[in-house]
Amino acid sequence: MAVFLRVRLTRLVVRQTTLARLAERVLSAVGESRSELSLELTGDRRMRRLNREYRKKDRPTDVLAFPIREAVMPRGVRSVTQMLGDVVISLPTAVRQAKRAGRSIDDELAMLLVHGVLHLCGYDHERNPREEARMSRRERVLFNLISPVPRMVTFRAGRETRGR
Image 1 (cartoon, one colour):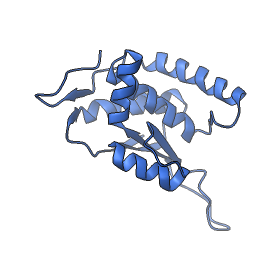
Image 2 (tube, one colour):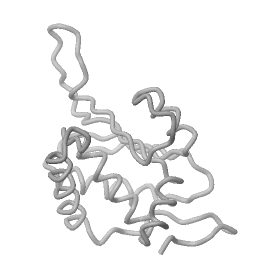
Image 3 (cartoon, helix red, strand yellow):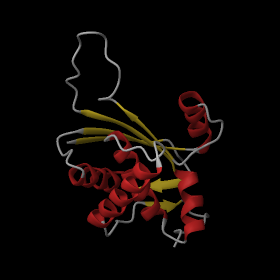
Image 4 (cartoon, helix red, strand yellow):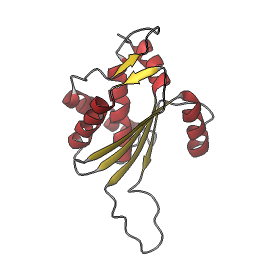
């Protein structure tokens, strides 16, 4: 199992090794312990661009998931990749959501990671209310399995501290 992590931020400090280990725990909890995951933490501007390009929604969002295994392959070509897909998380959006919900940025980041990985595994809350409820239940179960969530994100000196 490998997690390929890219952090495109300067205002927040991310403990990348801790986040990669958490992502490995999420993969293991969903039965994808042999899979690889690409995880990117980015800002709202890039997230808005991705959301506009791939979902035709001209606004930033919290998390986007791009499955690799479901990708359309040329006729006769079998996918042999271990790569489950890409999860992209907007950390500024996660910070705002954590504040509104009264939880830590670390918990919010973990929830978004779980949400994105479930999308890669075929869950889709936008399909219908029944699927939304199914995905929500699975998110809660997975979050409990990976809890307690380690501290992963801090603000650079001079910024506010943790979102608790």
